[in-house]
Length: 196
Image (cartoon, rainbow, N blue to C red; front, side):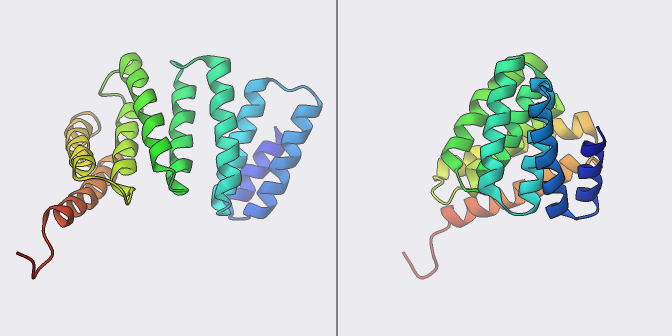
């Protein structure tokens, strides 16, 4: 527990290299003394966050994959923690521009999250935002992909305003993503000037 608090405090103070050292020591210690699988997964997730802060995305992605698959095995596909870890993995995939895998993962887990929690749940809304980002960040996105991203974000914006209120930070994130997706769609639909 003390190591977890220390690593968290070091991260909060932007001492990420030190937090990484403590986190790796904690993971090693937990494994050596037979800590529960769930506690080990939590430490691995914290380490993945630290790797991301250090911009060591490949190492973070490896851990995110382990945490997601471990959580899936331990808790099942419908558990909130499993779905949250899928979202974390998706974010890592986007950071490394693995758009195809990110879209595939999010489509799979979004359907589970919708079934379990419903369309108006915050986790589902965040998954929809992430899915739309995977669509419009992808340089190989088609016009249909961009239209789907805009439609997904417009629908998410409507739901988020109803459920969370206009001042919620997720509403601002949706608005920003929607502006970006619309701009990319407009640019794709508008022929370059000087062409007939």
